[in-house]
Length: 135
Ligand code: ATP
Image (tube, rainbow, N blue to C red):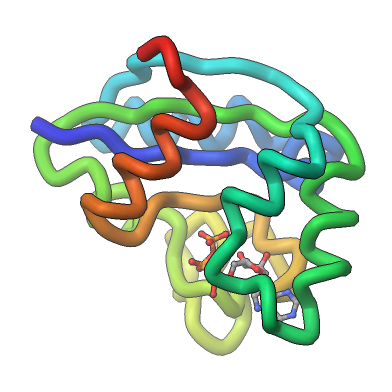
């Protein structure tokens, strides 16, 4: 069993899709180890997205992710990291995510792709420490 960090980003909260995302996580058989609705501080957002700091969209990404409450969830289960990536679908919700995935079903734009999920065991460990230091 492993843990992954899932974020229902501010677009997902604003659109009322928190329940939909949690429902899909639970129906897959994954469990919730911790969950929190919060507005993320800029410093945490910068650390979370550190790998993108030189990208042209980094500024927008920080603005967006700090623009309102998001839901951070520590999700647990066998192969939780790739299992949630499968539920989420590809980063571009039209070109990459397929119907049946969260992004494929509910999103149109890459910037507003509703959810984040850790992409590797190393990322999951780093992100869970950042978002849930007491877990
Ligand atoms: P996440 O890290 O949120 O799970 P991901 O791993 O599928 O997404 P990344 O390439 O790590 O995708 O990009 C991180 C986030 O940055 C994306 O989810 C999206 O919100 C935003 N993003 C990525 N590419 C672009 C882009 N070209 N324009 C605007 N925003 C982007």
